[in-house]
Every structure is written in structure tokens, then in C-alpha cells.
Image 1: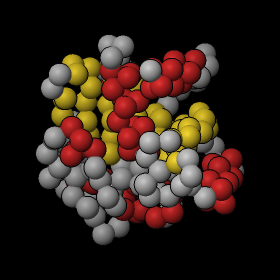
Image 2: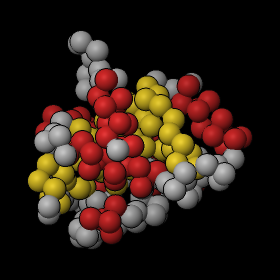
Image 3: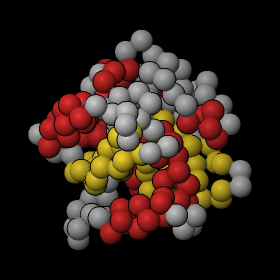
Image 4: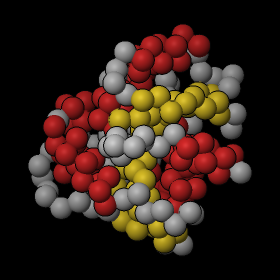
Length: 193
């Protein structure tokens, strides 16, 4: 029910008339805050409305979405961004007919540079035309700028923090960085799992 409620709130925050549709990046200050848990469950909640929903694993440092949905990870986002393939490898999720997964692909030596490439922006634009909702999982912000760059390219973000786990200073630092960027902050979620 928590994710259905969150889904309703996010649907209410959709782009205003005339604004471009945005993807939603899910960020967290530190490893273990639960951002992948939130991203996956939120994507499932959107798909249960019959909305064609894509979850993109942009955590090129420690990808996990492919394991959760049991899809291959040999080829995915990193391969596309590195120019190693011109196909996108999007998998449907059995049992959830409106849910699709774009796995991270091979773990590259330069995740920050791949995410910063203009090709990622173009890919997200294409995906936003093909899917009703695009949710993007990111690495923890403490690991580098990847998450913040991904959020800027997505256009909006949801920040996840863990009760009794996330340091206030780390959360404040991430929120300050988002505030100084063009990224729309959809909200902050406290994860107590």
C-alpha cells in the first residue's frame, strides 16, 4: 500500500501542461539506504495500473535490478552508452505484463563518463516516448557524481533515506546538490526496512 500511495502522489506531480515528460531517478545518499528496493517496487506499482513502465538500471557500479527480475545482464545500458551495440536490450518481466527492464550491462571502468555522455540524454528521450513511466535506479551518491548526473538527465528524482541509517549530513548534502541543479525533486522517502 505504501508504494501505491507513493505512486498516486507521483502521478499528481506529473509535468504541467506543455512541459516535457520526465523520467524519475531514484537516489540515496549512501549504500544500503534502499533505493533499489524503492525503485523496483515503485516500477511494479506503476505497471499494475497498466502503464507501460520501464526500470533502467543506471547503477553501473553495483547493478542489482537484473538479479531481482532474473534477466540477463551481459548486454545493457553500459554497452549502449559505450557504443558497443546499437540495439537496446529491454526485457519484459514474466507475470507483470506492463513492466520492462533495461539492465546495466557490463560494469565499465568509467561509469561517470558513460552516464555524462550526450547519448544517455538521447536514450532517455527515446525511452520516454516508448514508455508511460521510466524509473531509473542509480548508485549511491556517496560513490560519485553518477546519481546526480543521472537525475539531471532524467529531469526529476526521488531521494530515499534509511531510518536510523542515513547520516543527516549526507542527506542534506545530496538535497543541497539537487537544489542547485535543474532537477525537479519529487520528494524524500524514509525507508524503515
